[in-house]
Length: 94
Image (cartoon, rainbow, N blue to C red; front, side, top):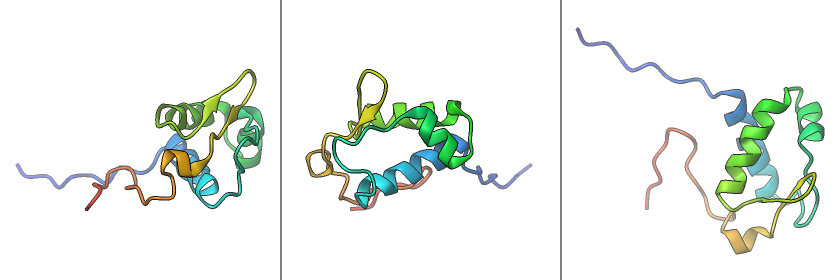
């Protein structure tokens, strides 16, 4: 039996991640500006869990730094965010 692959709909965490990444790239979130999990969740109308996942992913990528009660960005040129990166499920082409 040959079944076609199912398109995976983006999770809430993926959507929050992409939104935050766009805001970081276009400088809507400035370097050093605190990003608080609860505030992001309230503004985006989601629970804190997908926000926490998205923020952790951004920390793992070096785009945010975890501080005491918030997250901050170290500056985007330093971490290469100005370069295009693939969306989840897409491969980067050179």
